[in-house]
Length: 543
Image (cartoon, rainbow, N blue to C red; front, top):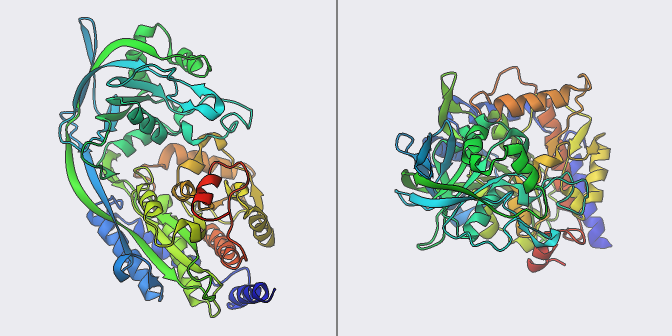
């Protein structure tokens, strides 16, 4: 009881140190200044392994150092080295040719297809039969297997992204997308099956975003974690347009809608497409020594100081890619200069607290999120604080500049024992915790908290709500759709001086308040019974 009282006293002193328990001294103008610099053209879209990375990571480290936040990386620095290999398709030479008997047609890059080789070799040639495998899912816990024991080694697998639709929460989580529906899983499973290449047929409903987003993301240098010699890897991981997909699957005699209907059936079996695909995918390779940026503030209790609350945001974006209206810099202002700016502000305030909470805090800015959560995955496997001693990960990724809301999204928090604390802190700030507005998009599996969840850490993102104060009822939904359709992963995701950053200020206060509470909890949190990440939490040493 004495220790619990001490923790609560430390928390009360920490929260009240700035006079206003709800404000905590958060500065919207500091957030604005960080976003403006990180999203400026000078950083050229913060591409991994570029001059933009150097400038962005040095800026983040310099800001931490200026505020007195300790280095939390390797060898007394603010950095954690992340070894990657960059792979850039040579557009003029990349080709796919589809052969059926004596007929042939070609698919051009990037009009008909985009993709890359994961093999980390300069020349990637293949000539193999193509097989349609539905959604490409093997999920024994849901009694679902799209492969049905077929031998697919050396084949080209063709499929849709997403997963079988359902309203049953016990079957692929109902409307909510699980990891089985993500493109990352599709390519991982194709590799495990021994496929030589894998092709996703893009449709906006199954992907959740348009072709422009796919083309922008997959047409530039793409980093991957360095593989070991002889390790299996796809010679091509690609997306094709729905028009190209229609031509590719024409031999089945079925439309894409009909093939999708078949893929949604549990009795689906792989369908040979009756064509061979000859691929020539030359790539330019480069070794990349990328880096995560980490700051640390020690906790007040010597016995709990080795444990930490983790705050994460990814610093990277897409760099320079396919020009749109003459602009080839993908600035990534919303995605994710905003999250970085907010985590920097939380680090500044945490360090300035005259009375620190019991546990320590780590402020982690990760690389290569846009390439498949690579920086956070690497940190999860090489943590500065072990997963079993990490109390939680609060992730911040993409915030809109339209002012404060009456609500907040914390999708995934309900799966952890932190849920009552999340609800309490939201209520104290006058925020309603809303359920995921687009569970079918699978956002939980698309940001860096997922990498921490996979190693057992209770992890989720804090996201701004949609019920904007002083705005029409449909304003939040409209601006989300507009951003997703017109600006997500596009050069138009830029900072403007007329941004209203008060919503970011609001979510920074909420994240800071919640983090302080978690840092003062008597026990480490875990996942609720039956959750997919509970076993990993047990393996990390937390019961």
